[in-house]
Length: 164
Image (cartoon, rainbow, N blue to C red; front, top):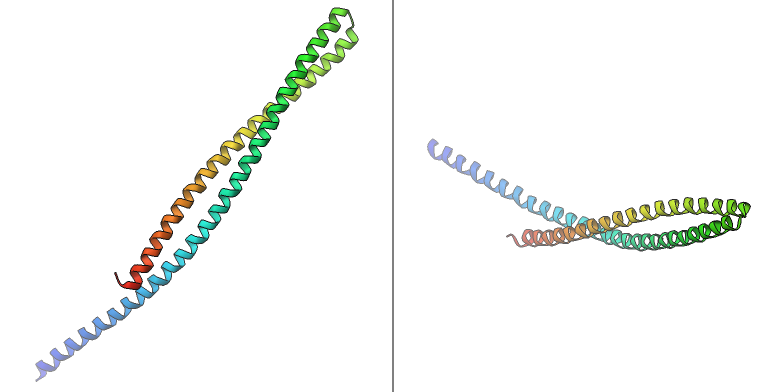
């Protein structure tokens, strides 16, 4: 009789332990479902933010290209002024008018300074364009990754709900 009671108690303990473990596993799936929904929400938020970043980078790219084009026009205009001032200076020297030639030489020096600063601006604008293009590329990669994450989270939610 004792042997039967100890076996019965052993089976009862094992059965209750298994039931308790199954209950704990069931709670874990609800927790998984909750975490998957949270991940899905966060991924959708990231996707929206990345799309906003893409649009902002596109706007920056357009502005930087407009700045670059304006700086290119400034450089061309300053170079035309430089050629005109040199021509005037040489004509003044040929005519023996050193006072006007000195004035033209000051204009030449000013034009050279303007050309230097415009070329520096042009280089900075080209760097900004390249940086914005890289940012745009990274943001597009982030969007692809977020879309993939959303797809995986939806699949996980479906599997958790239907027990697969």
